[in-house]
Image (cartoon, rainbow, N blue to C red; front, side, top):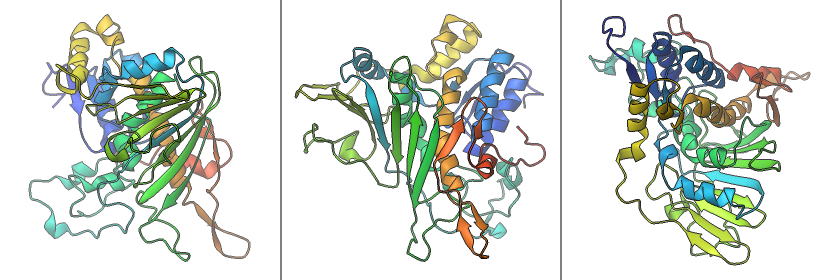
Length: 386
């Protein structure tokens, strides 16, 4: 299409996660502006490559975490900038996802059920060829590593965006995890390594930043796991969003900020201070345009051009979205490393990836477990390389 239709200026990419990187690279190589749904890419290497390519190609980019343009984020940012909760040493992030099949055995292929109009080989894109698997398209792909990025990929770019943005975070220094399985027992304590687990708990650490001059610990939990209710938040108040199903807690020395997924209306920002002070954001935002103008602002920036004020004003261009996506995908790297096994001296299979992974963000490398670096990128089928 791009070779034939020469007047196309920009493209939007809403494929499954595994095709985000190849499609965006293909378009940017041809000078097209791109809007890419979250997560920006399927793996860390792709995120770094596309971030650098956007600068080199001078194209306007935006990731589809529309909550980054939610005006109520300014309230959270204002509380942080004013020092209301003081230095933040801990952030807790959680979600009720997955809401798709995840954690069990891989469904059996059945080519006889492939819809006639579906080009299965093209849908597979960079993933290794497998016969048609019913229900993988259009939704169940999210829970399988060949195509999706699990709960982290689905909502991590909405939830983690808030602390990443307001605290000025960059690459984490380490990551570790534990996981739950739908078929766990003392004899089978693990999930299917081809897919994401039924639940996970991730811990990331960050160095001090200009906006938050103390070391920070961020935890992520999914599959229905969530943090305990802080004492300074009344027991009958939800933490995060409605029914405490999804949310973020910014825990500082003077108090706590609680809020919801940032693509929601309302964002539900709530401030609780140790002295008993409480401050809440509005229940709804009046008069906002669809998705807070996140898409429209990208269109305006495409028209104005790379380096314009409209471009510089975007809330999730790849200069920001790339490093933030890397934080999200770092959790998945830890999950996948958790299942690494090898034979020990007694001829027994043992897990060896269940440790804190030390991360050299600038060089994109795990420094204390070489085998984990295979998950920084992926193997591509010919014709879909990134």
